[in-house]
Amino acid sequence: MSSLSSRRRRRLRRGGDVRPSADWAGLPIDALLSVLHKLDPMELMMGGAGRVCRSWRRAVRDEPVLWRRIDTRFRKGHRCQIDEDTAKEAVRRGSRRCEAFCGEDATDHFLLFLAEHAPTLKSLRLIFSDRISNEGLLKAINKFPVLEELELSRCKHVFGKVYKFIGIACPHLKSFRLSCLHSYRSEAAKYNKDEEAIAISTMSALRSLQLLGSELTNKGLTAILDNCTRLEYLDIRHCFNICFDTALRAKCARIKMMKLPHDSTADYDLEIGIPILRRSKTICRDYALWKFGT
Image (cartoon, rainbow, N blue to C red; front, top):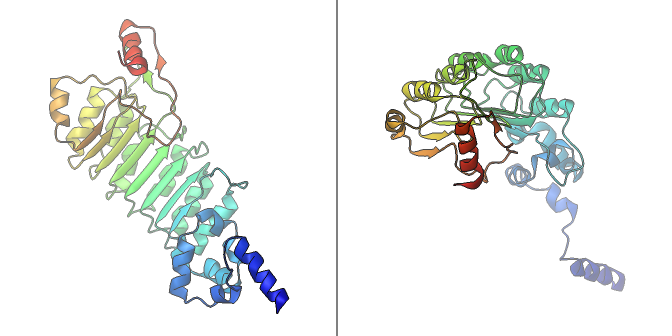
């Protein structure tokens, strides 16, 4: 008895009494799923939760509701990073019911796998995925007919008119995010800086649009405003080729929430590079406005 009491006292000194594992193992399934939903997705994917007891292991393996939202992004404090095979297993466990996927360093091969195994996907966020190409995206995007949210930030091999086909394939798309590491400012450039913006203007159901660091000009922004008539949120920070004249200001007046080219990026969740400048008095003035606010 004294030995048992001493062990109990040691547990209390370490921060409180500890329930026997049998209590956790005997939780009703609804209560167990509620607990597991509160865990970091990393714990589910890396198997930590499944080592608690047999009932937890079964739930993690067999309950698709736990895998409706999958986030494989790297997290500070975790030694391991989710690889493609682990991400695929998480998608499989969703039993074709996965509704949201967010990940980094995805590939064309994985994107096609996701399209086959998550036909009801509503949210797709791909970040820092240099191994996704225009061709791979075009093959997969037609298999996401109910997609409502899409992000393709820092995917440097996805560009140009491909966004037009996204607009056609995903008629229910309400939110689109696209950001570049660096913004470019050059009046002398001969290439079409509005090709992507005009392609994005086919996403007519958009309510929210972020084009951080885009090279679009007034022409491209006008096309978006004219065709995306339901737009309520517009983020064009670091889009330094836009000049707000009277006509453009009038078109933007209906937007409920708008972030302008020189607005702060302190609340943005990815790294932002400084603008890449061409030698011109106008550009130097814009850089001074961005850097010093004068």
